[in-house]
Figure 1 (cartoon, rainbow over the protein chains, first blue to last red):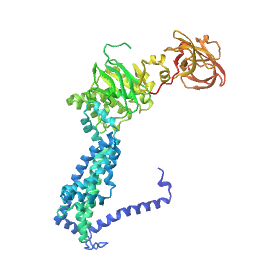
Figure 2: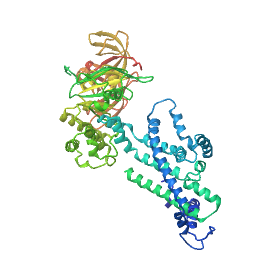
Figure 3: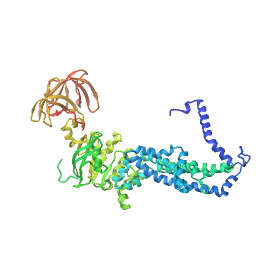
Figure 4: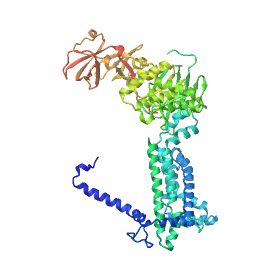
Length: 266
Length: 370
Protein backbone atom coordinates (compact mmCIF):
# COMPACT_ATOMS: atom_id res chain seq x y z
CA UNK A 1 0.00 0.00 0.00
CA UNK A 2 1.25 3.39 -0.95
CA UNK A 3 -0.78 5.07 1.75
CA UNK A 4 -0.50 3.44 5.13
CA UNK A 5 -3.06 4.62 7.67
CA UNK A 6 -0.90 3.63 10.63
CA UNK A 7 2.01 5.70 9.44
CA UNK A 8 -0.01 8.84 8.72
CA UNK A 9 -0.20 9.98 12.36
CA UNK A 10 -2.67 12.75 13.06
CA UNK A 11 -2.98 13.32 9.30
CA UNK A 12 -5.34 10.39 9.22
CA UNK A 13 -8.05 12.37 11.03
CA UNK A 14 -8.00 14.91 8.22
CA UNK A 15 -8.47 12.02 5.83
CA UNK A 16 -11.38 10.67 7.88
CA UNK A 17 -13.01 14.10 7.91
CA UNK A 18 -12.70 14.52 4.14
CA UNK A 19 -14.11 11.04 3.56
CA UNK A 20 -17.09 11.62 5.86
CA UNK A 21 -17.86 15.03 4.31
CA UNK A 22 -17.72 13.55 0.82
CA UNK A 23 -20.04 10.73 1.80
CA UNK A 24 -22.46 13.22 3.40
CA UNK A 25 -22.39 15.40 0.30
CA UNK A 26 -23.37 12.42 -1.83
CA UNK A 27 -25.90 10.91 0.57
CA UNK A 28 -27.55 13.90 2.23
CA UNK A 29 -30.14 14.67 -0.49
CA UNK A 30 -31.20 11.01 -0.47
CA UNK A 31 -31.42 10.85 3.33
CA UNK A 32 -33.24 14.19 3.36
CA UNK A 33 -35.91 13.05 0.90
CA UNK A 34 -36.34 9.73 2.71
CA UNK A 35 -36.87 11.54 6.04
CA UNK A 36 -39.34 13.98 4.49
CA UNK A 37 -41.39 11.08 3.05
CA UNK A 38 -42.10 9.92 6.64
CA UNK A 39 -42.78 13.47 7.92
CA UNK A 40 -46.31 14.52 8.86
CA UNK A 41 -46.05 18.08 7.52
CA UNK A 42 -47.96 18.81 4.34
CA UNK A 43 -45.42 21.52 3.42
CA UNK A 44 -42.28 19.38 3.56
CA UNK A 45 -41.20 21.01 6.78
CA UNK A 46 -37.77 20.02 8.10
CA UNK A 47 -37.18 18.71 10.66
CA UNK A 48 -40.59 16.96 10.46
CA UNK A 49 -42.98 17.86 13.28
CA UNK A 50 -44.16 14.22 13.48
CA UNK A 51 -43.91 10.85 11.72
CA UNK A 52 -46.47 9.19 9.48
CA UNK A 53 -46.94 6.62 6.71
CA UNK A 54 -49.91 8.43 5.18
CA UNK A 55 -48.04 9.62 2.08
CA UNK A 56 -47.22 5.99 1.24
CA UNK A 57 -50.86 5.16 1.83
CA UNK A 58 -51.72 7.94 -0.61
CA UNK A 59 -49.67 6.24 -3.35
CA UNK A 60 -51.42 2.93 -2.80
CA UNK A 61 -54.79 4.67 -2.87
CA UNK A 62 -54.11 6.46 -6.13
CA UNK A 63 -54.49 4.18 -9.19
CA UNK A 64 -52.58 6.71 -11.34
CA UNK A 65 -49.42 6.23 -9.27
CA UNK A 66 -49.79 2.47 -9.34
CA UNK A 67 -50.38 2.55 -13.11
CA UNK A 68 -47.21 4.55 -13.67
CA UNK A 69 -45.17 2.16 -11.49
CA UNK A 70 -46.59 -0.74 -13.45
CA UNK A 71 -45.79 1.01 -16.75
CA UNK A 72 -42.24 1.69 -15.61
CA UNK A 73 -41.74 -1.95 -14.64
CA UNK A 74 -43.15 -3.20 -17.94
CA UNK A 75 -41.09 -0.80 -20.04
CA UNK A 76 -37.98 -1.55 -17.96
CA UNK A 77 -38.37 -5.31 -18.37
CA UNK A 78 -38.99 -5.10 -22.12
CA UNK A 79 -35.98 -2.81 -22.51
CA UNK A 80 -33.88 -5.17 -20.40
CA UNK A 81 -34.71 -8.21 -22.52
CA UNK A 82 -34.39 -6.48 -25.89
CA UNK A 83 -31.22 -4.70 -24.89
CA UNK A 84 -29.49 -8.01 -24.07
CA UNK A 85 -30.93 -9.74 -27.14
CA UNK A 86 -29.54 -7.01 -29.39
CA UNK A 87 -26.40 -6.27 -27.37
CA UNK A 88 -25.21 -9.88 -27.28
CA UNK A 89 -24.90 -10.51 -31.03
CA UNK A 90 -23.65 -6.93 -31.48
CA UNK A 91 -20.88 -7.58 -28.95
CA UNK A 92 -19.87 -10.82 -30.71
CA UNK A 93 -19.62 -8.96 -34.00
CA UNK A 94 -17.67 -6.08 -32.44
CA UNK A 95 -15.20 -8.31 -30.58
CA UNK A 96 -14.79 -11.23 -32.99
CA UNK A 97 -15.65 -9.67 -36.34
CA UNK A 98 -12.92 -8.77 -38.78
CA UNK A 99 -14.55 -6.28 -41.11
CA UNK A 100 -13.76 -2.75 -42.23
CA UNK A 101 -15.35 -0.05 -40.07
CA UNK A 102 -15.48 -2.23 -36.96
CA UNK A 103 -14.13 0.46 -34.62
CA UNK A 104 -16.46 3.02 -36.20
CA UNK A 105 -19.39 0.70 -35.56
CA UNK A 106 -18.28 0.25 -31.95
CA UNK A 107 -18.26 4.04 -31.51
CA UNK A 108 -21.69 4.22 -33.15
CA UNK A 109 -23.14 1.75 -30.63
CA UNK A 110 -21.81 3.89 -27.76
CA UNK A 111 -22.92 7.21 -29.29
CA UNK A 112 -26.34 7.47 -27.53
CA UNK A 113 -24.34 7.98 -24.32
CA UNK A 114 -22.60 10.99 -25.83
CA UNK A 115 -25.40 12.69 -27.76
CA UNK A 116 -27.30 15.06 -25.40
CA UNK A 117 -30.52 13.33 -24.33
CA UNK A 118 -32.65 16.36 -25.17
CA UNK A 119 -31.51 16.18 -28.81
CA UNK A 120 -32.32 12.49 -28.93
CA UNK A 121 -35.69 13.26 -27.41
CA UNK A 122 -36.63 15.94 -29.94
CA UNK A 123 -35.46 13.79 -32.86
CA UNK A 124 -37.34 10.77 -31.56
CA UNK A 125 -40.47 12.82 -30.92
CA UNK A 126 -40.53 14.05 -34.52
CA UNK A 127 -39.87 10.54 -35.77
CA UNK A 128 -42.52 8.88 -33.61
CA UNK A 129 -45.07 11.56 -34.49
CA UNK A 130 -44.55 10.86 -38.19
CA UNK A 131 -45.52 7.23 -37.69
CA UNK A 132 -48.37 8.05 -35.29
CA UNK A 133 -46.71 6.12 -32.48
CA UNK A 134 -46.58 8.93 -29.93
CA UNK A 135 -47.92 7.97 -26.54
CA UNK A 136 -47.63 4.25 -27.26
CA UNK A 137 -45.89 1.56 -25.25
CA UNK A 138 -43.76 0.66 -28.28
CA UNK A 139 -42.44 4.22 -28.53
CA UNK A 140 -41.50 4.16 -24.84
CA UNK A 141 -39.61 0.90 -25.18
CA UNK A 142 -37.87 1.99 -28.39
CA UNK A 143 -36.77 5.29 -26.85
CA UNK A 144 -35.41 3.69 -23.69
CA UNK A 145 -33.76 0.93 -25.71
CA UNK A 146 -31.62 3.57 -27.40
CA UNK A 147 -30.43 4.78 -24.01
CA UNK A 148 -29.93 1.26 -22.63
CA UNK A 149 -28.13 -0.36 -25.57
CA UNK A 150 -24.72 1.31 -24.99
CA UNK A 151 -24.68 -0.08 -21.41
CA UNK A 152 -25.49 -3.52 -22.68
CA UNK A 153 -22.88 -3.41 -25.48
CA UNK A 154 -20.15 -2.10 -23.16
CA UNK A 155 -20.81 -4.74 -20.48
CA UNK A 156 -20.90 -7.67 -22.89
CA UNK A 157 -18.00 -6.45 -25.06
CA UNK A 158 -15.82 -6.15 -21.95
CA UNK A 159 -16.57 -9.63 -20.70
CA UNK A 160 -16.23 -11.15 -24.17
CA UNK A 161 -12.86 -9.47 -24.62
CA UNK A 162 -11.69 -10.94 -21.32
CA UNK A 163 -12.82 -14.41 -22.41
CA UNK A 164 -10.05 -16.42 -24.07
CA UNK A 165 -11.39 -17.72 -27.37
CA UNK A 166 -9.06 -20.73 -27.09
CA UNK A 167 -11.55 -22.08 -24.54
CA UNK A 168 -14.30 -22.04 -27.15
CA UNK A 169 -11.93 -23.65 -29.65
CA UNK A 170 -11.19 -26.36 -27.09
CA UNK A 171 -14.92 -27.09 -26.82
CA UNK A 172 -15.15 -27.35 -30.61
CA UNK A 173 -12.16 -29.68 -30.91
CA UNK A 174 -13.83 -31.77 -28.17
CA UNK A 175 -16.67 -32.37 -30.63
CA UNK A 176 -19.12 -29.55 -29.88
CA UNK A 177 -20.61 -27.64 -32.79
CA UNK A 178 -19.95 -23.90 -32.89
CA UNK A 179 -23.45 -23.26 -31.52
CA UNK A 180 -23.08 -25.84 -28.71
CA UNK A 181 -19.70 -24.36 -27.78
CA UNK A 182 -21.17 -20.86 -27.52
CA UNK A 183 -24.25 -21.99 -25.56
CA UNK A 184 -22.49 -24.37 -23.18
CA UNK A 185 -19.12 -22.67 -22.72
CA UNK A 186 -18.90 -19.09 -23.96
CA UNK A 187 -22.23 -17.73 -22.68
CA UNK A 188 -21.85 -19.27 -19.19
CA UNK A 189 -18.31 -17.86 -19.07
CA UNK A 190 -19.51 -14.32 -19.84
CA UNK A 191 -22.77 -14.53 -17.85
CA UNK A 192 -21.54 -11.88 -15.43
CA UNK A 193 -21.34 -9.39 -18.30
CA UNK A 194 -24.78 -10.44 -19.52
CA UNK A 195 -26.33 -10.03 -16.06
CA UNK A 196 -24.70 -6.62 -15.67
CA UNK A 197 -25.98 -5.66 -19.12
CA UNK A 198 -29.52 -6.65 -18.13
CA UNK A 199 -29.49 -4.79 -14.81
CA UNK A 200 -27.94 -1.62 -16.20
CA UNK A 201 -30.40 -1.66 -19.10
CA UNK A 202 -33.31 -1.94 -16.68
CA UNK A 203 -31.98 0.89 -14.52
CA UNK A 204 -31.32 3.09 -17.55
CA UNK A 205 -35.00 2.81 -18.43
CA UNK A 206 -36.27 2.87 -14.82
CA UNK A 207 -34.93 6.33 -13.95
CA UNK A 208 -35.14 7.93 -17.41
CA UNK A 209 -37.23 11.12 -17.48
CA UNK A 210 -36.36 13.33 -20.48
CA UNK A 211 -37.27 10.88 -23.26
CA UNK A 212 -40.20 9.76 -21.13
CA UNK A 213 -41.70 13.26 -21.07
CA UNK A 214 -41.63 13.38 -24.86
CA UNK A 215 -43.01 9.88 -25.31
CA UNK A 216 -45.71 10.06 -22.63
CA UNK A 217 -49.42 10.61 -23.09
CA UNK A 218 -51.93 11.37 -20.29
CA UNK A 219 -52.81 7.65 -20.28
CA UNK A 220 -49.32 6.24 -20.44
CA UNK A 221 -46.68 7.60 -18.09
CA UNK A 222 -43.63 6.03 -16.48
CA UNK A 223 -42.99 6.73 -12.82
CA UNK A 224 -40.38 9.49 -13.31
CA UNK A 225 -42.69 11.21 -15.82
CA UNK A 226 -45.63 10.99 -13.43
CA UNK A 227 -43.42 12.49 -10.71
CA UNK A 228 -42.41 15.33 -13.01
CA UNK A 229 -45.97 16.20 -14.01
CA UNK A 230 -47.20 15.96 -10.43
CA UNK A 231 -44.37 18.18 -9.25
CA UNK A 232 -45.32 20.86 -11.74
CA UNK A 233 -48.83 21.07 -10.23
CA UNK A 234 -48.05 20.97 -6.54
CA UNK A 235 -45.31 20.00 -4.14
CA UNK A 236 -46.73 17.20 -2.04
CA UNK A 237 -44.89 14.86 0.34
CA UNK A 238 -46.24 12.05 -1.86
CA UNK A 239 -43.39 12.95 -4.24
CA UNK A 240 -40.93 12.35 -1.44
CA UNK A 241 -42.34 8.92 -0.72
CA UNK A 242 -42.38 7.98 -4.42
CA UNK A 243 -38.75 9.12 -4.65
CA UNK A 244 -37.89 7.00 -1.66
CA UNK A 245 -39.56 3.97 -3.24
CA UNK A 246 -37.60 4.62 -6.44
CA UNK A 247 -34.35 4.84 -4.52
CA UNK A 248 -35.03 1.63 -2.61
CA UNK A 249 -35.87 -0.28 -5.76
CA UNK A 250 -32.63 0.95 -7.37
CA UNK A 251 -30.66 -0.09 -4.29
CA UNK A 252 -32.37 -3.47 -4.41
CA UNK A 253 -31.35 -3.98 -8.03
CA UNK A 254 -27.76 -2.99 -7.21
CA UNK A 255 -27.72 -5.42 -4.27
CA UNK A 256 -28.97 -8.23 -6.52
CA UNK A 257 -26.20 -7.34 -8.97
CA UNK A 258 -23.56 -7.41 -6.22
CA UNK A 259 -24.90 -10.70 -4.89
CA UNK A 260 -24.90 -12.37 -8.31
CA UNK A 261 -21.45 -11.03 -9.04
CA UNK A 262 -20.07 -12.53 -5.87
CA UNK A 263 -21.77 -15.86 -6.54
CA UNK A 264 -20.61 -16.16 -10.13
CA UNK A 265 -17.16 -14.70 -9.68
CA UNK A 266 -16.03 -17.94 -8.05
CA UNK B 1 12.68 -43.96 -39.05
CA UNK B 2 11.24 -46.81 -41.05
CA UNK B 3 8.85 -45.76 -43.79
CA UNK B 4 5.36 -47.07 -43.21
CA UNK B 5 3.15 -48.12 -46.05
CA UNK B 6 0.36 -45.86 -44.85
CA UNK B 7 1.19 -42.91 -42.58
CA UNK B 8 -1.58 -41.91 -40.17
CA UNK B 9 -1.15 -38.23 -40.93
CA UNK B 10 0.08 -37.14 -44.33
CA UNK B 11 0.74 -33.45 -44.91
CA UNK B 12 1.55 -32.56 -48.49
CA UNK B 13 2.89 -29.25 -49.82
CA UNK B 14 1.01 -27.25 -47.21
CA UNK B 15 1.02 -23.47 -47.75
CA UNK B 16 -0.69 -20.83 -45.62
CA UNK B 17 -0.50 -17.20 -46.63
CA UNK B 18 -1.76 -14.37 -44.47
CA UNK B 19 -2.07 -10.86 -45.88
CA UNK B 20 1.64 -10.13 -46.24
CA UNK B 21 3.42 -13.20 -44.89
CA UNK B 22 3.67 -16.83 -45.86
CA UNK B 23 3.30 -18.49 -42.47
CA UNK B 24 3.62 -22.05 -43.79
CA UNK B 25 5.71 -22.47 -46.90
CA UNK B 26 5.45 -25.83 -48.68
CA UNK B 27 5.50 -28.15 -45.67
CA UNK B 28 5.34 -31.90 -46.31
CA UNK B 29 5.40 -34.40 -43.50
CA UNK B 30 4.32 -37.92 -42.68
CA UNK B 31 3.46 -39.11 -39.20
CA UNK B 32 3.32 -42.80 -38.37
CA UNK B 33 0.72 -44.39 -36.13
CA UNK B 34 1.75 -44.10 -32.47
CA UNK B 35 4.57 -41.69 -33.20
CA UNK B 36 5.52 -38.72 -30.98
CA UNK B 37 6.50 -36.01 -33.43
CA UNK B 38 7.51 -32.53 -32.30
CA UNK B 39 7.38 -29.32 -34.31
CA UNK B 40 10.31 -27.29 -33.00
CA UNK B 41 10.91 -23.68 -33.95
CA UNK B 42 10.92 -20.12 -32.72
CA UNK B 43 7.74 -18.03 -32.73
CA UNK B 44 6.54 -17.22 -36.22
CA UNK B 45 8.26 -20.25 -37.73
CA UNK B 46 4.97 -21.77 -38.88
CA UNK B 47 4.81 -24.66 -36.41
CA UNK B 48 1.62 -23.55 -34.64
CA UNK B 49 -0.11 -22.58 -37.90
CA UNK B 50 0.62 -26.06 -39.27
CA UNK B 51 -0.84 -27.61 -36.13
CA UNK B 52 -3.95 -25.40 -36.32
CA UNK B 53 -4.48 -26.46 -39.94
CA UNK B 54 -4.36 -30.12 -38.86
CA UNK B 55 -6.86 -29.28 -36.09
CA UNK B 56 -9.12 -27.57 -38.62
CA UNK B 57 -9.06 -24.05 -37.16
CA UNK B 58 -7.23 -22.65 -40.19
CA UNK B 59 -7.70 -23.50 -43.85
CA UNK B 60 -4.52 -23.85 -45.89
CA UNK B 61 -3.99 -21.63 -48.94
CA UNK B 62 -2.97 -24.79 -50.79
CA UNK B 63 -1.79 -28.29 -50.03
CA UNK B 64 -3.39 -31.32 -48.47
CA UNK B 65 -3.85 -32.86 -45.04
CA UNK B 66 -4.79 -36.53 -45.01
CA UNK B 67 -5.63 -38.66 -42.02
CA UNK B 68 -5.74 -42.38 -42.70
CA UNK B 69 -5.46 -41.71 -46.41
CA UNK B 70 -8.49 -39.40 -46.59
CA UNK B 71 -8.43 -35.64 -46.96
CA UNK B 72 -9.79 -33.88 -43.87
CA UNK B 73 -9.73 -30.34 -45.24
CA UNK B 74 -13.50 -30.31 -45.74
CA UNK B 75 -14.16 -31.87 -42.32
CA UNK B 76 -15.02 -29.28 -39.61
CA UNK B 77 -12.80 -29.38 -36.49
CA UNK B 78 -15.53 -30.84 -34.26
CA UNK B 79 -15.88 -33.86 -36.54
CA UNK B 80 -12.17 -34.63 -37.00
CA UNK B 81 -12.06 -36.62 -33.76
CA UNK B 82 -8.70 -35.14 -32.82
CA UNK B 83 -7.67 -34.31 -29.26
CA UNK B 84 -5.99 -31.01 -28.50
CA UNK B 85 -4.28 -29.33 -25.56
CA UNK B 86 -3.72 -25.61 -25.90
CA UNK B 87 -0.97 -23.31 -24.70
CA UNK B 88 -3.38 -21.32 -22.58
CA UNK B 89 -5.61 -22.73 -19.89
CA UNK B 90 -8.81 -23.67 -21.65
CA UNK B 91 -10.83 -25.53 -19.02
CA UNK B 92 -14.47 -24.48 -19.02
CA UNK B 93 -14.72 -22.20 -15.98
CA UNK B 94 -18.40 -22.93 -15.29
CA UNK B 95 -17.89 -26.70 -15.00
CA UNK B 96 -16.20 -28.94 -12.46
CA UNK B 97 -13.12 -30.96 -13.35
CA UNK B 98 -15.28 -34.06 -13.93
CA UNK B 99 -17.75 -32.13 -16.10
CA UNK B 100 -14.84 -30.75 -18.12
CA UNK B 101 -13.44 -34.20 -18.78
CA UNK B 102 -16.90 -35.57 -19.53
CA UNK B 103 -17.80 -32.75 -21.94
CA UNK B 104 -16.55 -34.45 -25.15
CA UNK B 105 -18.65 -37.53 -24.34
CA UNK B 106 -21.64 -35.40 -23.34
CA UNK B 107 -21.72 -33.70 -26.75
CA UNK B 108 -21.36 -37.15 -28.32
CA UNK B 109 -24.60 -38.11 -26.50
CA UNK B 110 -23.02 -41.05 -24.68
CA UNK B 111 -24.97 -42.64 -21.80
CA UNK B 112 -24.28 -41.21 -18.37
CA UNK B 113 -22.85 -44.41 -16.87
CA UNK B 114 -20.31 -44.66 -19.66
CA UNK B 115 -19.33 -40.99 -19.22
CA UNK B 116 -18.87 -41.39 -15.46
CA UNK B 117 -16.67 -44.43 -15.90
CA UNK B 118 -14.54 -42.85 -18.64
CA UNK B 119 -14.10 -39.64 -16.61
CA UNK B 120 -13.00 -41.63 -13.59
CA UNK B 121 -10.48 -43.63 -15.64
CA UNK B 122 -9.04 -40.52 -17.29
CA UNK B 123 -8.68 -38.65 -14.01
CA UNK B 124 -6.85 -41.70 -12.59
CA UNK B 125 -4.59 -41.66 -15.65
CA UNK B 126 -3.53 -38.06 -15.00
CA UNK B 127 -3.45 -38.71 -11.23
CA UNK B 128 -6.16 -36.21 -10.37
CA UNK B 129 -8.86 -38.63 -9.19
CA UNK B 130 -9.33 -36.66 -5.98
CA UNK B 131 -10.05 -33.42 -7.80
CA UNK B 132 -13.20 -34.45 -9.73
CA UNK B 133 -15.50 -32.01 -7.92
CA UNK B 134 -13.15 -29.01 -7.96
CA UNK B 135 -13.56 -25.99 -10.17
CA UNK B 136 -10.76 -25.14 -12.64
CA UNK B 137 -10.07 -21.92 -10.73
CA UNK B 138 -9.15 -24.03 -7.68
CA UNK B 139 -6.38 -25.88 -9.55
CA UNK B 140 -2.74 -24.96 -10.19
CA UNK B 141 -1.57 -24.38 -13.75
CA UNK B 142 0.00 -27.82 -13.96
CA UNK B 143 -3.16 -29.52 -12.69
CA UNK B 144 -5.27 -27.56 -15.17
CA UNK B 145 -3.14 -28.75 -18.08
CA UNK B 146 -3.38 -32.34 -16.84
CA UNK B 147 -7.17 -32.03 -16.74
CA UNK B 148 -7.03 -30.55 -20.25
CA UNK B 149 -4.98 -33.60 -21.28
CA UNK B 150 -7.59 -35.94 -19.75
CA UNK B 151 -10.35 -34.05 -21.57
CA UNK B 152 -8.47 -34.34 -24.87
CA UNK B 153 -8.01 -38.09 -24.47
CA UNK B 154 -11.34 -39.16 -22.96
CA UNK B 155 -12.94 -39.83 -26.37
CA UNK B 156 -9.95 -41.92 -27.42
CA UNK B 157 -8.83 -39.85 -30.41
CA UNK B 158 -6.09 -41.44 -32.52
CA UNK B 159 -4.28 -38.13 -32.82
CA UNK B 160 -3.45 -35.71 -30.01
CA UNK B 161 -2.28 -32.18 -30.85
CA UNK B 162 -0.39 -30.23 -28.20
CA UNK B 163 0.37 -26.56 -28.72
CA UNK B 164 3.11 -25.61 -26.22
CA UNK B 165 1.02 -27.01 -23.35
CA UNK B 166 3.73 -26.43 -20.76
CA UNK B 167 4.90 -22.97 -21.83
CA UNK B 168 3.22 -21.23 -18.89
CA UNK B 169 4.59 -23.58 -16.23
CA UNK B 170 7.81 -23.29 -14.27
CA UNK B 171 10.77 -25.52 -15.10
CA UNK B 172 10.48 -28.16 -12.36
CA UNK B 173 6.78 -28.71 -12.97
CA UNK B 174 7.37 -28.75 -16.71
CA UNK B 175 9.79 -31.65 -16.40
CA UNK B 176 7.36 -33.63 -14.23
CA UNK B 177 4.55 -33.24 -16.73
CA UNK B 178 6.86 -34.00 -19.67
CA UNK B 179 7.54 -37.38 -18.09
CA UNK B 180 3.82 -37.87 -17.47
CA UNK B 181 2.99 -37.10 -21.10
CA UNK B 182 5.67 -39.59 -22.20
CA UNK B 183 4.17 -42.24 -19.92
CA UNK B 184 0.64 -41.60 -21.21
CA UNK B 185 1.93 -41.73 -24.78
CA UNK B 186 3.44 -45.14 -24.08
CA UNK B 187 0.37 -46.45 -22.24
CA UNK B 188 -2.23 -45.35 -24.77
CA UNK B 189 -0.19 -45.54 -27.99
CA UNK B 190 -1.85 -42.33 -29.19
CA UNK B 191 -0.13 -40.42 -31.99
CA UNK B 192 1.09 -37.05 -30.72
CA UNK B 193 1.94 -33.91 -32.67
CA UNK B 194 3.62 -31.60 -30.20
CA UNK B 195 4.60 -27.97 -30.73
CA UNK B 196 7.35 -26.33 -28.70
CA UNK B 197 10.08 -23.72 -28.95
CA UNK B 198 12.10 -25.46 -26.24
CA UNK B 199 14.74 -27.71 -27.83
CA UNK B 200 15.41 -29.51 -24.57
CA UNK B 201 11.74 -30.41 -24.28
CA UNK B 202 11.73 -31.59 -27.90
CA UNK B 203 14.78 -33.80 -27.35
CA UNK B 204 13.44 -35.24 -24.11
CA UNK B 205 10.02 -36.24 -25.42
CA UNK B 206 10.01 -36.90 -29.14
CA UNK B 207 10.52 -39.88 -31.40
CA UNK B 208 11.19 -37.43 -34.22
CA UNK B 209 11.59 -33.68 -34.37
CA UNK B 210 10.71 -31.42 -37.30
CA UNK B 211 12.70 -28.19 -37.09
CA UNK B 212 10.71 -25.24 -38.46
CA UNK B 213 12.18 -21.99 -39.69
CA UNK B 214 10.44 -19.29 -41.72
CA UNK B 215 7.52 -21.54 -42.56
CA UNK B 216 9.63 -24.44 -43.80
CA UNK B 217 10.80 -27.68 -42.24
CA UNK B 218 14.59 -27.39 -42.35
CA UNK B 219 15.26 -30.84 -41.00
CA UNK B 220 13.33 -33.76 -39.64
CA UNK B 221 14.82 -36.64 -37.71
CA UNK B 222 15.39 -38.03 -34.24
CA UNK B 223 17.36 -36.16 -31.60
CA UNK B 224 20.68 -37.80 -32.48
CA UNK B 225 20.20 -36.98 -36.20
CA UNK B 226 19.64 -33.31 -35.44
CA UNK B 227 22.44 -33.06 -32.89
CA UNK B 228 25.11 -35.14 -34.62
CA UNK B 229 24.23 -34.44 -38.24
CA UNK B 230 22.48 -31.06 -38.48
CA UNK B 231 21.44 -30.19 -42.03
CA UNK B 232 22.61 -26.60 -41.81
CA UNK B 233 24.02 -23.93 -39.53
CA UNK B 234 20.52 -22.96 -38.35
CA UNK B 235 19.71 -26.42 -37.00
CA UNK B 236 23.23 -26.73 -35.57
CA UNK B 237 22.74 -23.47 -33.69
CA UNK B 238 19.16 -24.24 -32.63
CA UNK B 239 19.70 -27.72 -31.20
CA UNK B 240 22.12 -27.83 -28.30
CA UNK B 241 25.05 -25.54 -27.62
CA UNK B 242 27.48 -24.83 -30.41
CA UNK B 243 30.61 -22.89 -31.33
CA UNK B 244 30.86 -21.30 -34.75
CA UNK B 245 34.05 -20.28 -36.59
CA UNK B 246 34.27 -18.49 -39.93
CA UNK B 247 36.56 -19.76 -42.71
CA UNK B 248 37.13 -20.28 -46.41
CA UNK B 249 37.15 -23.60 -48.27
CA UNK B 250 40.59 -24.49 -49.61
CA UNK B 251 40.16 -28.11 -50.68
CA UNK B 252 37.66 -30.94 -50.70
CA UNK B 253 38.14 -34.73 -50.72
CA UNK B 254 34.88 -36.70 -50.63
CA UNK B 255 33.08 -35.57 -47.40
CA UNK B 256 36.25 -34.09 -45.97
CA UNK B 257 36.67 -30.36 -46.41
CA UNK B 258 39.77 -28.33 -45.62
CA UNK B 259 39.03 -24.84 -44.38
CA UNK B 260 41.38 -21.93 -43.75
CA UNK B 261 40.64 -19.91 -40.63
CA UNK B 262 41.24 -16.20 -40.16
CA UNK B 263 44.82 -16.68 -38.92
CA UNK B 264 45.76 -19.06 -41.75
CA UNK B 265 45.37 -22.30 -39.78
CA UNK B 266 43.83 -25.09 -41.83
CA UNK B 267 41.13 -27.23 -40.23
CA UNK B 268 39.53 -30.39 -41.60
CA UNK B 269 35.92 -31.26 -41.13
CA UNK B 270 32.78 -32.83 -42.61
CA UNK B 271 30.15 -31.16 -44.71
CA UNK B 272 26.59 -32.42 -45.33
CA UNK B 273 26.42 -30.41 -48.59
CA UNK B 274 28.72 -29.79 -51.53
CA UNK B 275 30.79 -26.64 -51.00
CA UNK B 276 32.67 -24.91 -53.85
CA UNK B 277 36.31 -23.92 -53.30
CA UNK B 278 36.91 -20.41 -51.95
CA UNK B 279 33.35 -20.18 -50.61
CA UNK B 280 32.74 -18.67 -47.16
CA UNK B 281 31.80 -21.31 -44.62
CA UNK B 282 30.88 -21.73 -40.94
CA UNK B 283 32.56 -24.41 -38.84
CA UNK B 284 30.62 -25.80 -35.92
CA UNK B 285 32.03 -27.72 -32.98
CA UNK B 286 30.01 -28.77 -29.89
CA UNK B 287 31.43 -27.36 -26.63
CA UNK B 288 31.75 -30.86 -25.09
CA UNK B 289 33.88 -32.10 -28.02
CA UNK B 290 36.64 -29.56 -27.39
CA UNK B 291 39.57 -30.42 -25.16
CA UNK B 292 41.56 -27.71 -23.50
CA UNK B 293 45.12 -28.72 -22.79
CA UNK B 294 48.56 -27.38 -22.02
CA UNK B 295 50.20 -30.06 -24.18
CA UNK B 296 50.69 -29.17 -27.79
CA UNK B 297 50.27 -32.65 -29.27
CA UNK B 298 46.59 -33.38 -30.12
CA UNK B 299 47.20 -37.11 -30.61
CA UNK B 300 47.74 -37.57 -26.87
CA UNK B 301 44.12 -36.54 -26.41
CA UNK B 302 42.88 -38.73 -29.23
CA UNK B 303 42.46 -35.72 -31.49
CA UNK B 304 43.93 -34.71 -34.83
CA UNK B 305 43.40 -30.92 -34.90
CA UNK B 306 44.34 -28.04 -32.69
CA UNK B 307 44.34 -24.26 -32.47
CA UNK B 308 45.87 -21.78 -30.02
CA UNK B 309 43.53 -20.06 -27.57
CA UNK B 310 43.73 -17.83 -24.51
CA UNK B 311 41.70 -18.72 -21.43
CA UNK B 312 39.27 -15.99 -20.52
CA UNK B 313 37.22 -17.46 -17.73
CA UNK B 314 36.32 -20.74 -16.06
CA UNK B 315 32.90 -21.30 -14.51
CA UNK B 316 32.08 -24.10 -12.10
CA UNK B 317 28.64 -25.50 -12.96
CA UNK B 318 28.51 -28.51 -10.65
CA UNK B 319 28.50 -31.42 -13.05
CA UNK B 320 30.75 -29.67 -15.57
CA UNK B 321 33.30 -26.94 -15.94
CA UNK B 322 32.76 -24.29 -18.56
CA UNK B 323 35.82 -22.60 -20.05
CA UNK B 324 35.46 -19.45 -22.11
CA UNK B 325 38.41 -18.95 -24.43
CA UNK B 326 39.39 -16.53 -27.18
CA UNK B 327 41.26 -17.36 -30.39
CA UNK B 328 44.16 -15.28 -31.71
CA UNK B 329 41.67 -13.41 -33.94
CA UNK B 330 39.35 -12.58 -31.02
CA UNK B 331 36.69 -15.20 -31.62
CA UNK B 332 34.94 -16.43 -28.43
CA UNK B 333 34.57 -20.17 -27.92
CA UNK B 334 32.98 -22.20 -25.14
CA UNK B 335 34.28 -25.51 -23.82
CA UNK B 336 32.31 -27.79 -21.53
CA UNK B 337 34.29 -30.51 -19.83
CA UNK B 338 33.85 -33.00 -17.05
CA UNK B 339 37.58 -33.30 -16.55
CA UNK B 340 39.00 -31.91 -13.36
CA UNK B 341 42.29 -30.96 -14.92
CA UNK B 342 44.73 -28.78 -13.07
CA UNK B 343 43.06 -25.36 -13.04
CA UNK B 344 44.70 -23.30 -15.79
CA UNK B 345 45.21 -19.66 -14.93
CA UNK B 346 43.19 -16.92 -16.51
CA UNK B 347 45.02 -15.34 -19.47
CA UNK B 348 47.15 -18.45 -20.05
CA UNK B 349 47.73 -19.50 -23.66
CA UNK B 350 46.63 -23.08 -24.21
CA UNK B 351 45.94 -25.56 -26.98
CA UNK B 352 42.43 -26.47 -28.01
CA UNK B 353 42.28 -30.00 -29.42
CA UNK B 354 39.46 -31.64 -31.31
CA UNK B 355 38.81 -34.34 -33.83
CA UNK B 356 38.09 -33.55 -37.48
CA UNK B 357 35.08 -35.89 -37.31
CA UNK B 358 33.48 -33.48 -34.78
CA UNK B 359 33.86 -30.47 -37.05
CA UNK B 360 30.77 -29.71 -39.11
CA UNK B 361 31.09 -27.33 -42.02
CA UNK B 362 28.14 -25.39 -43.48
CA UNK B 363 27.76 -22.81 -46.22
CA UNK B 364 27.78 -19.34 -44.65
CA UNK B 365 24.63 -17.81 -46.00
CA UNK B 366 22.10 -15.67 -44.24
CA UNK B 367 18.83 -17.47 -44.48
CA UNK B 368 16.64 -15.38 -46.74
CA UNK B 369 13.70 -14.17 -44.66
CA UNK B 370 11.01 -14.87 -47.23
